[in-house]
Length: 96
Image (cartoon, rainbow, N blue to C red):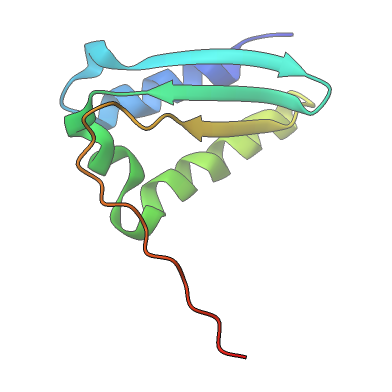
């Protein structure tokens, strides 16, 4: 199986971030498909995730298209870097 998806992800993310040398992509293939794990500099997390996750969602959509062209299911996991400044999500309250 080719690694077009990994190269594509590296290219896109390196174009977005301020520290392209810190971009690392790990590729794992199993029965569920391809899992790409992305690590970036903690200062670049905001640029990769985007406002309300819009950038991450767009990257995932593009990877899905790359996967379809290569007959593979491609998933993206963005690794939370140590020292990340992102606040934890508050728990949602369910009204009964």
